[in-house]
Amino acid sequence: MKIAIIGGGLAGLSLSILCAKQGMKVQLFEKKKYPFHKVCGEYIAMESWSFLQRIGVPLSSMDLPRIDELVVSAPNGNQLLQKMTTGGFGVSRYTLDRLLAEIAREAGVEVHEQTAVQALETTSEKAIISTPRDTYEVDIACGAFGKRANLDVQLKRAFLQKTQRQARHYIGVKYHIQVDGFPTNRIELHNFKDGYCGISKVEGNRYCLCYLTTAQNLRTYNNDIKEMERQVLYRNPYLKDYFERSTFLYEKPLAISNISFVPKTTQEKHLLLLGDAAGLITPLCGNGMSMAMHSAALLGELLAHFAAKKIDRSTLEKVYQTTWQQQFRTRLKAGRLLQSLFGKEWTTNWVINSLRPFPGVVRKLITLTHGSPF
Ligand SMILES: Cc1cc2nc3c(=O)[nH]c(=O)nc-3n(C[C@H](O)[C@H](O)[C@H](O)COP(=O)(O)OP(=O)(O)OC[C@H]3O[C@@H](n4cnc5c(N)ncnc54)[C@H](O)[C@@H]3O)c2cc1C
Image (cartoon, rainbow, N blue to C red):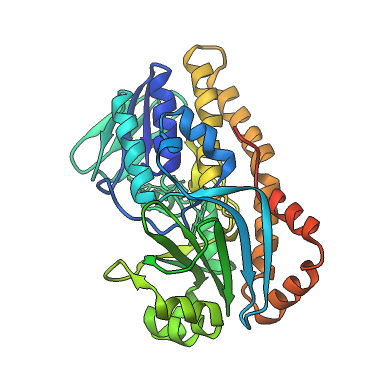
């Protein structure tokens, strides 16, 4: 069976490896060239550890920081510290996506880098993928093109209309920094007006500092990121301290816009969607990467049944949609609820004060936004 995967992030790369290992002929299209940095907090929940090892990422020998302590602060500096039951680990997307692309190539995937898919036609029988250089015909196409892509517009996806009308638009900004005295087993989540900023360690002597805020917040400061940081983020005393005493390792911030958390669909016109292209959890949950890989695992298994002619095309599509919903619905809802409580001066403070005496409730909230190993 011939399969095309559009988008070579965690979802697309994982699916390509799983399908190639099942004997499928896989073409993967990624518009950028590996390795490259990505706006992401780079904290991966432990539930993904065994999956990554299984598909060939040698996590145990990479000397990665294990993270089992969470600190959350309100804009005024009021804070809560919580031990996490399972926690996670830190690894940069620069390293992880590069490793997965290498593993995919070794497994026989044809990886087309610097190749943006410009158009696609899909039916229940076949798919035709158009890139600037060539056209490819395959049996099935899968979309793993992330939060928002040119193809969403071409497919006229419903979430775009809702985003324009009602939903808030967010931006994400990321740096790699060096900072003294930051515990390697800790992730800190510092709130500021209309946003929050996560800091945690990745491989080497580096920490990832990544924040999400409203596009409106940035517009207020004439789209000047540095000015917004000084005027808004610095009002949280922890963030002011980190911004002032860290060494910033990028020449300029890495930023993305047009992020929204409006529900999406798992397929469009027989194109099967996974990762952020199927649904985006709010970053404060630290579970988007695990969901991307987990959705690849779900779809990979069903595609293997389809390739072996154990299920037909319509069953493949229906079962994928149902399983995806069962697996991720609760997490997405919990994430939206938490997002509505954080990033506001009064509510964040109130949440922290209310939760501090109840570590069991905090642990339960963390569990609601996470899944089990897959
Ligand atoms: C601010 C922020 C912080 C976050 N922090 C965390 C965190 O700490 N932990 C966590 O688990 N999750 C976090 N996330 C979520 C996480 O980054 C995503 O859930 C994850 O990257 C989704 O993987 P993906 O493969 O679906 O998409 P992506 O990793 O975005 O990959 C999509 C790929 O598709 C490519 N592409 C797009 N269009 C085309 C096209 N037409 N042709 C070819 N290629 C195309 C892109 O170049 C990209 O490489 C965060 C998100 C944000 C915004």
